[in-house]
Length: 431
Image 1 (spheres, one colour):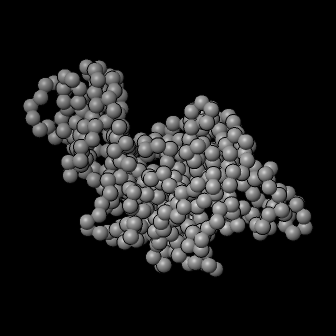
Image 2 (image 1 turned 180 degrees about the horizontal axis):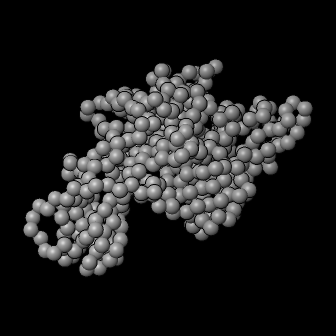
Image 3 (image 1 turned 120 degrees about the vertical axis):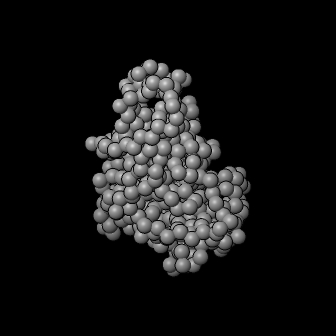
């Protein structure tokens, strides 16, 4: 259902006969930040829309060529007056204006404190963890520049596909790739799998085509009398036609009773998945406090990093209950080290490299959150640039940006919790 708006038309100069008639503005139900301008184009030639807000931040829409058409203008801030003109080679329309909706009452609330000398040029991508599901982009002033809502809570797994789209899990086995314009680019039904915690995209190691990868639950039923079943993890890889092309199951490679890991129902608890530069998989096991590297062809475990792993770690290099393993802007490994209530009640970014041939761990740096932002579960950290760190402290409802010397530059407090927060380069959104 689309909501109609009353338009206030303002003719600012004498023009030729109006080429664009029956102009209306609609708000699609699927995207609360993309308004659609409908009109009739008498001359049936190419047209586009130029639009801007009261601060004169000007954007151009895509170009189209039809006599009766609508065209979307995305990334509109709530509660903001906008102006636009319809343009063609032969004509420029009147000046039109409208005001966007206010944010809904159940939208997260925020309190932002920031260093007056600090700013960033991109946007932060958030997703709530409760009903109703809300995801949104925020600028460095704490203003919402895009959002969409669901009738129910979103599934936890979501990720950045590229700078103009993201991937999202709906239900337990359906992945959508979506543009911020609201277009569904791809839908994959992973029929046989139960996806959890992490989804990502990469290129196929064989032909460079795009692949979609998810963490899966795997089960070892009635192994003995200690527990009824053991829940482990796996990896499933699908091509863009929805065909499973590869899978991995932890129980095919190790026997839980031959390992040092605690036997329990929620055994390995994978929470992160990344594709390394060589095409192999990095998988984070929270309950093991380890990162594993998995050969993406054979499924062989190449190495295990962490407590009782294949690399010697000094005391200050040990990590606990980690999340968000990835390669950073400098091509180092980086993870969010949650810490642990029993060992170290502080959370940090841990940055390092590995010499795989010699099994040597090379410590690069740590960036610690203040003690009051310790989060024993969930959370993330990513670079904004080489010396700025974007942290999500999930259990504290805080998102902060720290310098490499641990100075807080940007501090956002909310009444909602977020599992992760990603940084998006805004320049690529408007290509």
